[in-house]
Image (cartoon, helix red, strand yellow):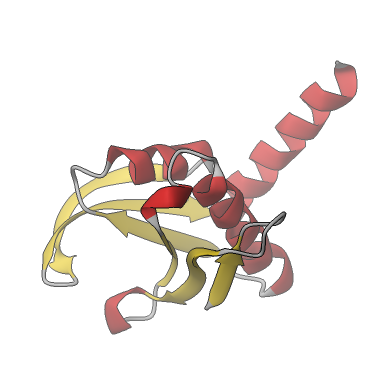
Length: 121
């Protein structure tokens, strides 16, 4: 688990982690931010770097994420990362959650596509 700090001020904004999903073998990208950090792109930046770290440095083949269904901000972050929504499930953290996954092959393909677009612009 890593602390998230505001770059200019050093203020603590929250946490980010790759961790076991609710104690099972799946690896989850997770984060929690103080309300002052909401809407500033911090969650997207942190989650993107955690996913990169998981695939490039740790060699993971799959990363998952869950959110509470009404948390549209987190669902949007996961979609921006290229994660695929797999549906609602009732088996994580004792409540109904939305469930997302990202495979390493899809992540690599997405990164290559972005790099091609940026290189041609």
